[in-house]
Amino acid sequence: MTDQGTSSRSAAAGARAWRLGADIDTDALAPGHAMKHGLDVIARHCLESVRPDFAAGVQPGDVIVAGPNFGIGSSREQAASVLVQLRVAAVIAPSFSGLYLRNAFNVGLLLLTCREAGQIQEGERIAFDARAAAVTRPGGQALATEPIPGFLLDMVEAGGLLAQLQQRFHPERTSP
Image 1 (cartoon, rainbow, N blue to C red):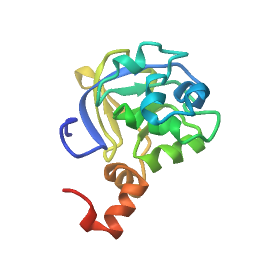
Image 2 (image 1 turned 135 degrees about the vertical axis):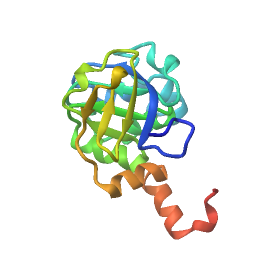
Image 3 (image 1 turned 45 degrees about the vertical axis):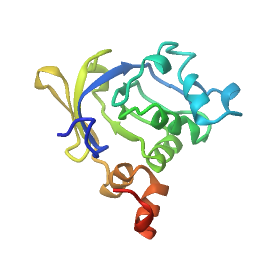
Image 4 (image 1 turned 90 degrees about the horizontal axis):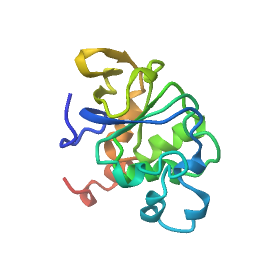
């Protein structure tokens, strides 16, 4: 496994967990009142209705651990993009909205489907490796995640679909 200082976005060690409940909707992630602004402003309001401390306290490489149905609601892409803006490494939950799942991978946000996500406690430092389909809790307890197709992991590691296409069709424009 790698740590947050490496280029891999599909693996991390020492990621701090932020616990959320079930049915976190897109309006909680990207509130309607902030949608007229850019992602930098939307990010300041991310999850304010359920975790007022989140936007100010989340650190690059932290993970969200939520209950089932994460990302339900509208199809607004900003609900996934805002977590990328905040540099959240991954969201771990038992299930995700289908629209949210697609938007997340398109913008480079890693989603790990883990039936046992509820075992992860607030503030725990965990490790994950999406290619190995595993989350590891302190003490070495492994929690299985559903396998993610390689093309989606490649998309996350590229930084999202647009970045991946830019690298593929205009490699001279991408920085090392």
